[in-house]
Amino acid sequence: MNILPKTAVLILASIASAAAIAQTPPPPADSTAPTAASSPHQRDVTSTPASEQPTSKSPDAAAAATPHQKQVTDASKAGQKDKKQMMKDCMAKEQSKNSTASKDEVKKACTEQISKPSAPTE
View 1 (spheres, rainbow, N blue to C red):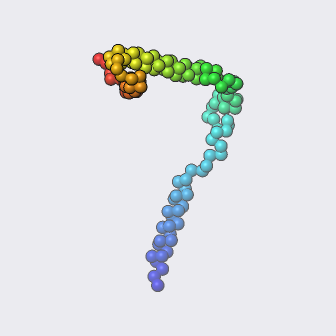
View 2: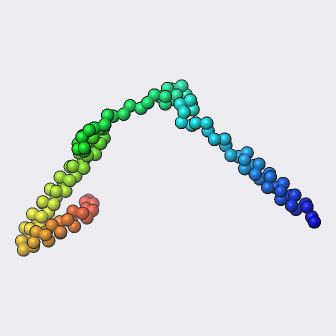
């Protein structure tokens, strides 16, 4: 039997596994610990708890805790009002164009018009 090829394969496998282990970085101790920060200021900031807005006891969206949440909920309400007004205007316009159309037909036509993305005006 020829042992040389088997020995060569065994040596190459050992070298390859050693190289793979050497390239694997050691796991960080705790990269989120305050002592892992790179400056004294970062250590001070990461060691103090973040301040949070108090929670609201009201289920109403208008009682949102942050100004951003209030802005978003107000915009949503404004969008709903605009859509209702657009629907009313559309229905009045459609009714005046075709007085024989039923209210359901007019509503369907307006719903389709409002839900379509508006074409850009130039």
